[in-house]
Length: 75
Image 1 (tube, rainbow, N blue to C red):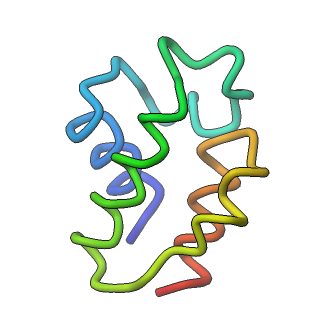
Image 2 (spheres, helix red, strand yellow):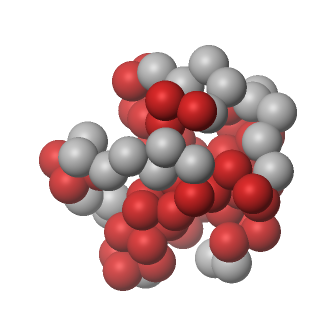
């Protein structure tokens, strides 16, 4: 999954107005980000890739870029 595909998945699944520039933004600066978005994102990524994502590790991540890196590792 490329970064562009990842941000499209995030935007489409979570219905958030995000662009590629938002990958590196801290969650405090991402529009309307909350913990439920994380759960929905994990489910969408696992469904899309067929790979399990380490949810416990994701909870410490503070940006979509960090989550993307973990998703890339899991694939």
